[in-house]
Image (cartoon, rainbow, N blue to C red; front, side, top):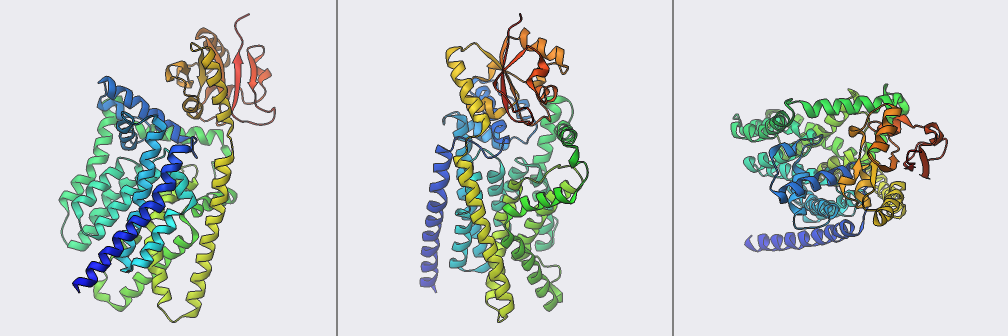
Amino acid sequence: MAEQIRVSRTESIRNLILISLTAGIPRVIGAFFLRKEPFGDAYCYIEQAAVMKGKIVAGTFSINDLSGFWLPLYQFVCALIFVVVHPAGFASKLVSAVAGIGVCILVYLCTHVLTASQRISLVAALAIALNPFHLEYSASAMTDVPHAVLVMACMYFVLKERWTLAACLGAAAAFTRLDSWLLVALLPAIQLMRQRKVPILTILILSLAPALWLFICWKASGDALSSFHAHDQYVLARLAAHPEHYHLSLKHMKMDAYRLIYSVNLAVLVGCFAGLWFVFRDWRKRLNELLRIPDLLVCLLFFFAYLSFIVSAYLTKNQSDIWDRYGLIMFSLGLPVLAYSAQQIFSQSSVLAKAALGIVLVLGLAQYGIQAADLAHFVANKPRNEIIANYLRQQYASDPTMKIFCDSPEVRVMSGIPRSQFFESRDAPRDKQGFLEFLRAKGVKFLEIPEESETSTPSQLFPGLVRESGDTLEGTIPAPDDKRIDSLYKVRPQQ
């Protein structure tokens, strides 16, 4: 028996090393060499981390500096790393890369809890380690993968019944993304059902994250709900800019459903529904265990809790779109369940069930091919905002005093120009005449107009041809006449 345990432990260590290398090498390389981001929010996180880092170094950092549109834990951790690791973008990407390795390891550990199979656990871990879409976001400055590693770790320690540690990780997740506030209810409910006692300490630890965030918002703005109001204003602005999203059309819902399945993976989704069936099957056989929460059900509760949160927010219009990256956390949470379901089905004698599972797995692998093609296109494609950023960098090299009006964080970060040289919409008047006078009064040399118009004053004021502004603007990298796209104009001096 001791010999079997020793061999199993050796195999487990060997598998963990293999997973770490398989997951780590491409993610760290991607963080180091990939200079662009798959989603624009990443540049906002980088800017926020850079501002925090500057205040930490200057000794002026305060709790008010944590306030903003997003929950701040990821940006704060990146800022601390940015103190010693440069540049800010690489520091932020490095956090995601390390988190991506952690997710792959936790998929292995959680799968082993469910299946007790080293081989199946290794396959599940490699399935996420080699997933092109997960690779892409593990090398980006986004919260999706760092948040996922916290949630996965929380779930793993729930499976191990290490409740205090699980609660601390859940609180960290809830201080990273708002959807993890659901853990304040989910985790104590699971512990209550497993231990048959009210988990006071778990509730207190998990409640710290929402309470601290509300306090930060109140301290910074006098309104504890200021971040929620800002989110509501953004959603309203997006709906105003895209009135076709006011109502849930079949076309729009199909597109958003495809985005979600794209990252959750069809095989994982089907595997989780199959897992529900296995739970109900076991309950039917043992009615006295209806109130028991087995390990499989723990994983299913985590998976469907996050899926329900995203779908509910979308259907109630608290979220205007479902972006494909939203499914990354469900992909991580659902892989152990898929592995368990596959193990159960292949151990049965039903040929039909095995054939159905085989078809689903083939379709899931086909999604990898689509994602790989999308990743190759992303790496090879040079986005328009990068062209604008490169041009501004060249102009700044010859004129370090020039001022730029730019609402695009992508352009600001990629240009490498100091933040003090930029103005944005929150600084400027919202009428056309007042806006043009503002540009000249501030000595703005270049005006960048982003493709999206939700919060950008120039994008709203100049939706079409540059000739609308008369002799004030000169097209440098202009937009086509019939298309809204990122563009750059030179502000002509007063005649």
